[in-house]
Length: 237
Ligand code: SAH
Image (cartoon, rainbow, N blue to C red; front, side):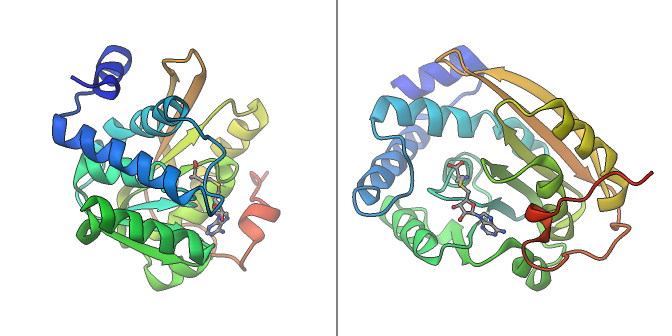
């Protein structure tokens, strides 16, 4: 058993088979390689990447598995985290979304190189534009290190089908951020399903929030490009 599968089993009770572990490590190595010429991640060592990219990405696996069958999308995927690791583990058809076209072009190359090209699509554009093109197409979405919870909820809602899930990866969100998110649930047609805190093997804390799409948003979404992140929705009195 390799180092990653041992770590995932011991710390999170998640099983990884040999083939999956090889693909996950191939992904990390390929991303580190691309990173020599393009800024995809600040994490430079293999040990750091195993914990902060692979282990962290995989903590969301049970929530993605719990979502209804169908298309998975990773919003603001950057270096393909958590999108590529979760694609490897779930076998779901996956769309990696980032507004920086050269990043997603590089990820498309990485997916082909490691042999999962047919399961990975990319979208080089804004999430708000994707929401117009692919309304209600996604069964599950993830987002790590992208925006505040309320911005993520607003961006994700129009993309999700009914009962689809949004899995948000957070480090330590402020009370305000969480309160605001809880206050806009009805407005955007999402409901908090689960809020779980994890400890990574390096001792750092992470928190995952899972929202379920319950119905149509009360307002027209997406709003104009940029507003979800620059001027987030607030609870209405
Ligand atoms: N999820 C990755 C990268 C986080 S950085 C990780 O955890 O390592 C956030 C990424 O989101 C950046 O690559 C940025 O280009 C992208 N991004 C930010 N706002 C966006 C939007 N509205 N539409 C599409 N991509 C966006």
